[in-house]
Image: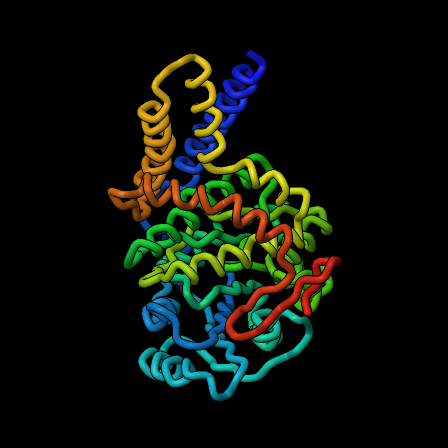
Length: 376
């Protein structure tokens, strides 16, 4: 009876949290009915896009930077190596859009052990404007991208960001990556933001220059192995808040292999453990696997048909996530329950990997995480 009570309590609590999180994310991430028009008197903005190598959909995502419906902005493309194969593409795009102020900055500023941050430093210093957004090269920017970031800013805001939403998956493992990015990670991040615990995600970091300068400047983001974790701590240290833009932005995925999905999720797990260990440890209980096992224990204790009822339980669990994806206008396939279940079966292994692992590879750079969350 004690085991039955514990199983019922755990299952009931996790189902309640799951349904509540789906409802919150459905409300926060609903697709806007129409693009936001620029408001009169909007400030000029610098868009810094660090680029490295040729990725899936890279031409489309970089070209979207030139199609922003905003009256005054500049684009700074940052490349670390003069031999990077992405340079001819960037130069071609700039030549196609001569009316949009854009520059290509080449070089590396080794202010930290974070290669991406080192690539962005020159863009930060070269920016002509006081509102600066660091936008990853694989994010597809909608025409009202800057309006939506500015609309999120409040008097107590220190940083606006948005998680990536996977789209256009090609193949089984790309579908699994969508299940990680969208209905799991983005859902969790919007719930945290809604209850006042917003944290940064490095795909989009929208700063006002004076805020970051007050926190130590762009070099201060090298205090952690991940620039978004450092951003969160800088903003909170200033007594300000990180806020998420409603309706996050698309990251087209294309083809993915199992090893790619694992390496990416492993890297993020190790970064979360290094930077926010107190929040990382409870992650072992997330997902639908342990609630499903608790449900199965309760059914078995009551002499019920375990397998068919467990299948129904998981169909309801992942059906709620499918409802979130449809409400938000995100990609969701007919086999999503299988993709979601596989994701959740991977979570305990990823948690253990994140707990024990110390190093990872990022774009050809081998990075080891030290005990103080710095990287070498």
